[in-house]
Length: 126
Image (cartoon, rainbow, N blue to C red; front, side):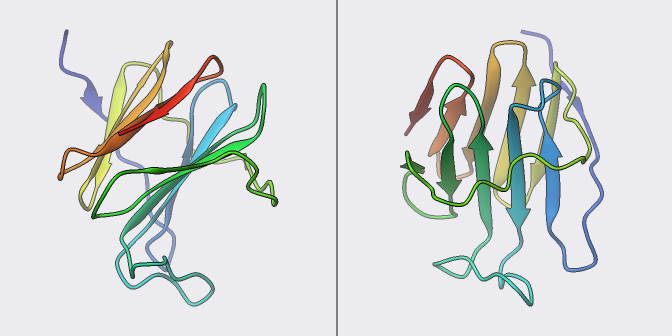
């Protein structure tokens, strides 16, 4: 497999980075260690949270330690705002996280080997 082009996505003033897949069906938010003035990850961060809209709304949260958590009924549904799209074939990384976008879906992993795959067809965590 060819090495994906690393895509730079600018962070907000508080360090959060948001991106969507080109289909706008999956949206992710990276929150740095320590969180922001309005949100602090459960374990202090950093944290990567990705949500899928169709066919059912789900959220997957990946922290720096342990496996990803799949939430099948997250309640609030903030996805997906008009933000930078991570182009198919491109990758993105910040903190301990690395994501690769493809026409099949979005694969994200942490340096500890845990991660997830999310697409319209399925969602798996490890």
